[in-house]
Image (cartoon, rainbow, N blue to C red):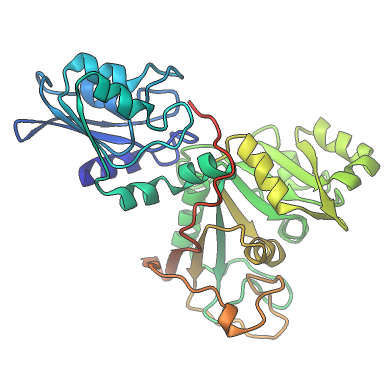
Length: 373
């Protein structure tokens, strides 16, 4: 199963909103075939493994990281392929929460006389597909907070200068992260201060992220790099619903440049971030990375809407009480309220460290289950 999980991870960034799935076929104690879901719309892991197997799989055991699908989507059911191949046993790490499957795949296999066992390495399987599980359970994407900071926790100097805190290797890694998510989110303050383009450069992208700007009063200028490149990579300008009604001319200007402009409910020009995540979930976005600035990062943190953090720490000191902090929201009042986390992972990226950690293992309240393919 751990081999199947390692294979599944190869699909990261290419299969979403579908889950990453791996499959290993074992016959008479020997691996005879293996595969994984390689791209959205392509064959699922079970069919990929069967297609690549060596010899007969009659009587074999299929180790699969997720319950096999039993419905027609972009591809035929995997249960059908396993039954036709003569597989005798299926071992699944976890059940699929997708409403069209959710136990039906297991039942279909058992009715065909195949032994099915579920629950081998379930924690690893759920962690691998945490974003998929969250989207299916809550209708919202997995939210990653990403920032680069100095050793004393500053993301920019007192003048707002932030280029560059980290070295070239860390910046390449940040671009690689952009190249596997569905969207990158920044606030209008970052756009006005830094004029970023937020594209994936220097590395090969697995997908093209939608660049999302939170702009409660539609202040983004036509001269911004994001607007100028809107026809090359998608740009979604999110404004407050009330503000959109009063700024139709600005919205038309942005739309004529190739941007999509939508209004989300809010108050005082501030966008309701929960409502925004609901909208992104309706668009089947699975992984969303929030890049800043500090006010936007802090708002997601304060409202407990973030699932993961990726922090690049450079061996530099900036200092200054007016230098910018990464989480510039309300923050907490007492140390008893401090967010504690475990399982942080650290690795060197050039001269900088990248620290990644989950802010919560809770996949969210299961208020509804969304569709997929």
